[in-house]
Length: 171
Image 1 (cartoon, rainbow, N blue to C red):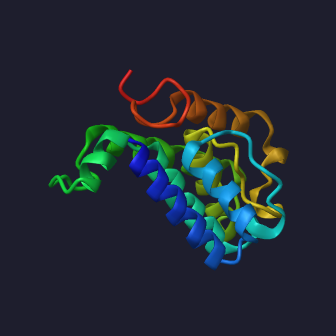
Image 2 (cartoon, one colour):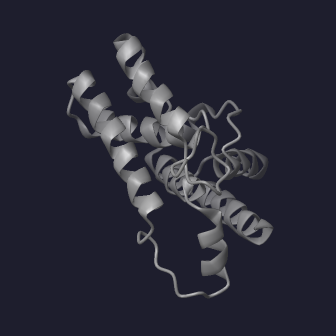
């Protein structure tokens, strides 16, 4: 599976670099954390306040929580389409449900706050520990309810063969 890891880390790093997320070393660090779901985010500064960088990170977090055996098969040109696996569908439904609960608790239906809720839900499910920068990702004032939702998403985790933590989807 290491070819998938190397290719996706390099692709994430390049996209982060061109999205203005920082210098080469910062983008490499962010890519390693995003793909590996390391849970030890660096100080991103303004990188996560930019919408383009956030989109790149969310896409690669979603990629990292999926089953890596399927990624490897796709890389080797097997005819498998994304979204057909029950595990992946369940993961997306779980993440969307968590984001909707956070949005409802927030009560603010602005695009920035809804995006921050989705970003936080994806980050929790991937157990990466990354959150959007600035005030948009600050759900501290909601205390325990949001913390419980994010902890449940982290406890569930990603696909069985993925770098994310948690119990995994099929267990």
